[in-house]
Image (cartoon, rainbow, N blue to C red):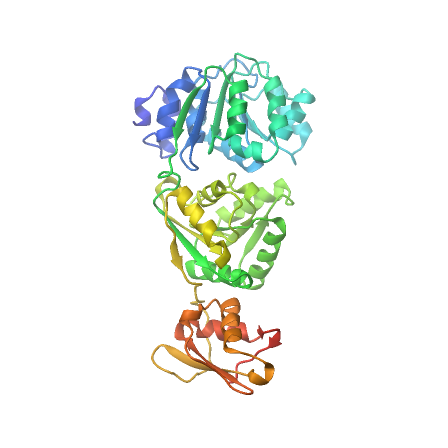
Length: 461
C-alpha cells in the first residue's frame, strides 16, 4: 500500500513524499488504522522496520491544533532515540506549523525545558528518568495527553526503568490511548501491557526469517583474544567504509579498543555512558559529516544511533543477548541500502555464534583474520614455492621453544591459523617457518616487538 492511498492529511502526505517514502512497511500498514481509531496497540517489529513512522503519522493526524497542551508523550530508553524520534516528527510536521516537538532528557538545562513546555509543546519524547522528574516538579503536565507511546519497551525494562514507567502511567488518564512498541515481547513487557492497556490489539511483524534484512553481509572471524584489536584495525582499513561502528560490551573495553585504533591512525571517538549528552550529539554529527572513520560504543547506544549510509558494523565483543546482535547490526543497511557486519569470536565461543545463527535464521560467512592489505615491507625473504616465504626467527631449542609455540604466537600476534602455516624447523639458536605470502607483511609488523613464551622474538634479516 502506498502512502498516497491512506487517510493522511495533504500536508502530511506532502512531507512524507519529500522524505522519499512511497510504500508503507508491514508494521505501518498493520497499525495505521487501529492507531488512527485510537485503539491501544502492542506491536513487535524488527529494527529498521519503520515503526517510528508507524506511530507518529496517525498520532500527528489526530492532534488538536487549538490545544497547546502536550498531547503525545513518547518514552524511550535512550537520549539518542528520543532525539531521533523528535527529528523524524519535525520532518513529518514540516507543513503542520502549529505542531511543535521537543526531546527531554538528562544533561539538558531543566529551566529551559520547563520554559518551552509552559509555552506549549504538543509532542514530547524523552527518557523515563527525566520525564518522571519533570512530572514531580510539574514542569511537564499530562492533563491534555491523548496518547502515550512506550518505544523499545523491552530495552527500557532491561535497563531498570520499570518503576519509572509505572510512575508515568500514574499520571496518564485511563482514556488516553496507549501504544507499546518493542523488538521482543517478553513476560515483563506482557505484564506491563496487561496491567496498563485496555482491550489492546496485538501485531507482530517480525519472524526469525525477517529479523535481519538480506542486504547485510554477515562475517564471523575466529580470532585469538590478543589479536582482536589488530583484527579490528585491519577490517577498518580494508573495508574503507564511509561510516562505521565498533560495538564493545563494556566502557573499559571501548576505551582500550579506541586507544589502540587511534594510535594506528584511525580517526574515532568513544561513546559510552560516561560521555555527556552534548558531546554525544557532537560526535554523531561528526560521524555523519564524514569527519570520523568510526565510533566505538557500548550497547546502551545501539538503538539510538541513526546514521545515514552507515556501511560497516564490527562486533568486537559478542553481545550478551542474541537480540542485541540484531539491534547492533540493524544500524546498517537502512532503507534498502547494503551493509557489512563482522563479529569476532574465540574458538571457545563458537557455540554462541551458532546460537545467533539459529536465532536470526541466518548463516555467517566464516573468514580468517584478514591480512593488512595496505602494509608493505622492504625485507626480501627466500621463496619456498610460489605461495610461501621462508622466515628465520632468532629463537630455538636453546630458548626451550617448540614448533607449537611458534604456531601459537603466529595465531595470537598475526592471526594465521595453524593449517595455513608451512613447515617449521626448530634449530638450536634459530627457527625457520614457512609463511603464506599474504601474511608476510603482518608477520614483519607484529613480530618486530613480539614475544614467544614471553621471550622477545626478532626476524633475522
